[in-house]
Image (cartoon, rainbow, N blue to C red; front, side):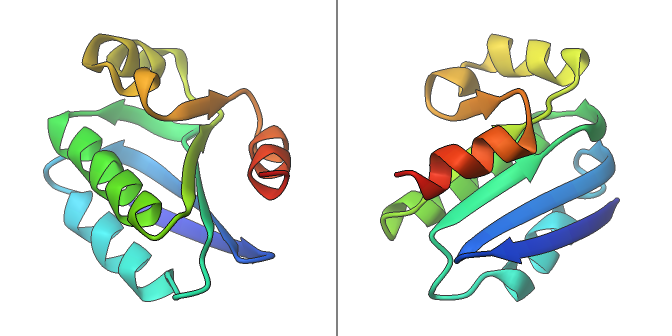
Length: 113
């Protein structure tokens, strides 16, 4: 898994590429841990580069959600592929985490909170 990060106004945009599964989830967690600061108020996961996600990937997203909301922040997901969106629907993740059609829209909504 490759990851890119972009920070803006105490928000962190995370863009993983490849598969988000048992074999890559530790990379995601480790790199995210390195980038998060005490001032991080929002995380946007732009998932347009994710072609496959399994329960380990879902668990990492839920863990990230719990961590950021525990300190009063917000997690949003943007640009989900149809395959991944179907997994989100089946898992119920869409009931707790807002998904936006674009990264810009997700950022606007997080900043506007």
